[in-house]
Length: 207
Image (cartoon, rainbow, N blue to C red; front, top):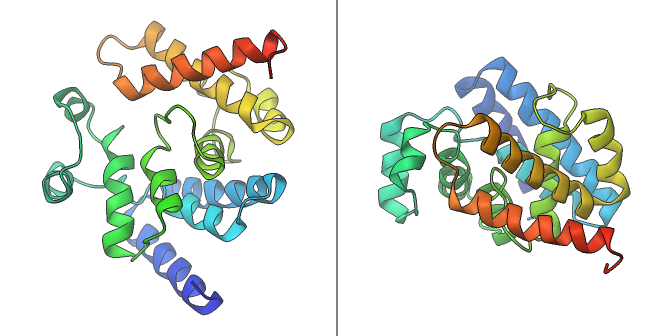
């Protein structure tokens, strides 16, 4: 993707966000894009890919049940009944990856996966996936809604993104265990198990 194509895509994405999502969501999206680019520069990842993945990570956040069903059926996306019961909380990341490909023409697999996994993560995330997953939690517009103080998590993300990912994964899991009265998705559990083990190995000096 050359510079002109990239700029045109960002303009299209910006126009779409402002026409289809709330002002608060648009601010969050821009914050995640900027944070993703900063993290990419810190960790030697392509900053343009990171910015674009951050900008598109919530592109399906405003979808209706019918719109989600169209993408789930068209692309045979793995969505269980419990996920449907949570509205767009989890589905938007999976559908959003396919929407970014179909509507915006984003055919880069790394960007696709960064969007797809930004909500629940997965074991052995790529650096771009870790960047968007982390940026979604630490961007400047984010209020404190996790078990880790953001004034601790934000600098940690720039010191060691692997440890930051561990803390986020464990925080999400523990929050859901203590606060959720219903479903905790399989991907969240697997992400927690993998990164909790990784964190313990770090504490024991094995990494």
